[in-house]
Image 1 (cartoon, chains in turn yellow, orange):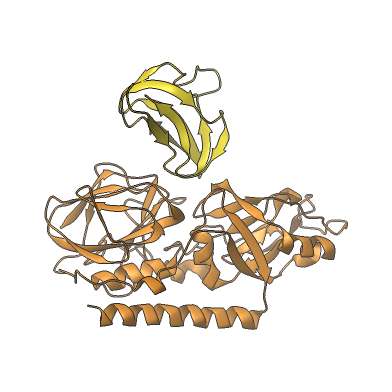
Image 2: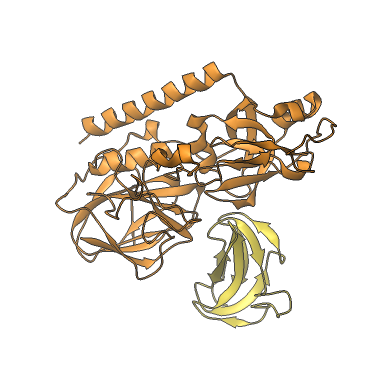
Length: 80
Length: 325
């Protein structure tokens, strides 16, 4: 069993799981990510910032919905 | 001497005390949103008052130093790293050539200030180095910083490392903010009950909150019915054009109040129901998306008193910094 890691929101805003409404989510549970893989976007101040995974592993849970408001430090997803 | 922007953060701009000489012409002043943190950052590194610093919103940049210098970080509570090792905020530090300044995730507040000995030495425009991004003027090429930018720093300033602000004088940005407001100029457009309710409401900062203005959610206001006068728009929130002071609050549509801040338009046709007092603009500027804000009505005399208190607090901070160096 490898260590569980989390990806947190670096700042507050609105979380988007997909790059645009027609596209599939950046990641789903079970997907393999590496450090630097884009897992979502956070919109604040009319700007979108890519949120990247900090470590590699499988996505075990996505804890926020698409277009949900998130606070700074809030866990977005877990990786194992 | 230069600062190399390795990562820009979300919204990092050059700011100083603001472009006040153009205000009478309708030019927004821009300038540091949190004046206390801005002035303390300069005092810590030994810069003269008015030197330009970097203002970073929500997400800190990563910056390389081309030469040895002195720097300080104040404002929002986010971990400050020098070469990956956490260092004290609200204190001046020596950086060697090749050192890298970085940041962890935001804990509270919204804006951090990075002062470097000698100040950010961009060309002043209309008497100020502040960036006004909407018009693309001032600061570094009139815009927020990008990776690869090389920022000039004033020469021949070594600064004074080892200074710090006593913990008791460091502002606490956590928890709900209370912003004092002088009611007017067009508060007559709102029903008395609705105006009273405005000051009872817990408003939440929306994601639409930047240097131009902060939009809040949490209630609605009722307008006094009237036939709109000639020259006013058809929305009941419209009036015949008036000046918008910095901090003025308007409510287009009646649902989401907008507080106009340092980069905002200085006049227009929305009823302004109150104005955040000058000494609380910096409090607003340290609230972030999702934070709770209450507005509290005060008299002009109370507002002027608060301005004197803010000046006294800054003077006390400067004295304490001098005494500890």
